[in-house]
Length: 473
Ligand code: SF4
Image (cartoon, rainbow, N blue to C red; front, side, top):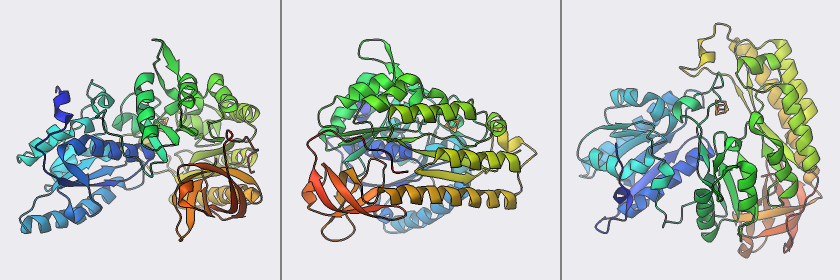
């Protein structure tokens, strides 16, 4: 199917329509939802927080979480009632399902939910105006192709992309994955790895900064596998892109997520010691502490490699803090394997981490295995791991009390007179201060640490570059 750029040009005759997007899942889905808004804005769509007022409701789904399909159908059932109410009042609502569940189960969604008008995958949202036109004319539409054209090339240039909070902005630089971990659906729902060019990334970064962003979070399913056409016509790796981005006027902070240990090369590690704007906090999923399970997961890295990476990162940037992902109870996991995971956590020390009990995803190799871990054993292991990770996170936060940290202020706090921001380690920080701090970075003295946030009394303007303090833990 050929898509013309005309399809996303502003339509001067467009009347105002209301758009409500429900977003589940990772930051990449948050980014995609915002880009859908950008694509539809020239066609007269404005956001609404009330789904009952919406001419178009998009459910942007995630396939990673447990029982994703059931949750989606349950939400669709609620939206159906709103759609019926609008129809009874002589109005319409187009109900669309997007994202990874749409990609994986598109035909089944249309079959099981006859009130859904449109199903489209993560690679085709740039086609939304044309798809909506077909849906509005009464067709039920399914588009889950992996089109040859790059969707990013079809996003409107003129619109400053909408970003959550504005001060911290997501920027997708890479999509898809070629790793095929045994438990993961991403290679099937997002397709093969593909990277945007450096010029496209830099252009979007400039637009985001011009619209108020001071911190950019580069996104990709496998972000450190990014390699794209550089400004000099050569193939660049992520380290080169980071160095270029760090030079952009107005940008205070940079992060990138999510990385694979296998793609963490020495040039990228060196960036952590040499680019002050690159925050000293890295999310590096390891999944298990057992080489036997890592092999069963098809992770393509082992524990020796992970330990070496941690050591190199801490040499390059002594104040770096780490977070990670863990899956407990992968098929075949024994008590000894799990003990190796606990040992890895204990010797590494994480500032925070995400941990989940393995749950099978249809179509993945791990789901076909016969040696599933009994649920009660997997539950007990998860609790033990989470208790250890919780203690590490508490210790990390507690150690921040009394220290001075650079905080980027992102918006008002929960209470009158408060402003809220993020520390270099992504902890929410609340202080009593003027709203004029929003969008700036200041050094604050942390007075109290809570399980998931920090608070501070004093602050000083930062005219110097971000400091390089040691990590809390
Ligand atoms: S590297 Fe990440 S995205 Fe790719 S298959 Fe493995 S878990 Fe999924």
